[in-house]
Image (tube, rainbow, N blue to C red; front, top):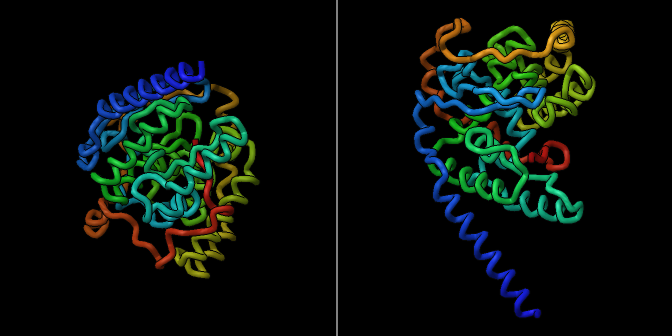
Length: 310
């Protein structure tokens, strides 16, 4: 009886591994993501649970190339979301071990330990189902992305597809939605504010419901930016003294309450937001990662800054 149970377990595991192997072999290629003209359409979910097509790439009128993304914005998400971004090759083994231990103790799949690269892979190619198979696909795609793309390109994709509000995806749209300006004009405080929302823009870090909580986390992120040398002391103090335009956000709250959010296509068929011409130096930087401000810039206190992602 025991032998049969072991045999069945072995066969089940073997079948699953074979299934995973076949599934991974059918994963889409990632090399094409290196092309600056690359455009694709993914499905994103609104706050009513319905899916809508979302354009990823230059044809999206809110798309913000790497050269127009402030360094403070890049470092805000790196220090808060994935402190080992410049050290790992797509996945963080130590974080995964800790997540597995936590999930086994809680008997759940609540902690995912996803890196920025894994989150980008998930957003571009995978569903939101919480399964071991999806996690394996995510890790595989993240590893492939690290082989084919620069860190700067990965951050560019990540920041252009993250959720920041009701049908608000990407920092280009987020900057316009909350502050009425292009992402290239964001202040350090505004960068930290948007980064602070990332763990849960729908509930936990929704500025409509928990503005104080978002501001507190943005203060923490600003402190990290100062500690790592991204901000000087004067810039840090000025950022702390600045308050986001709460009045503008209250207007958005009123609009959401009066009418459910309506999805608006972000394809190039609509009128594009006019921004200042890109300076030659900015164009050269579009495919480069932001330079670390110091030798230990990619590391920080895990208990204070790293947010586990599903």
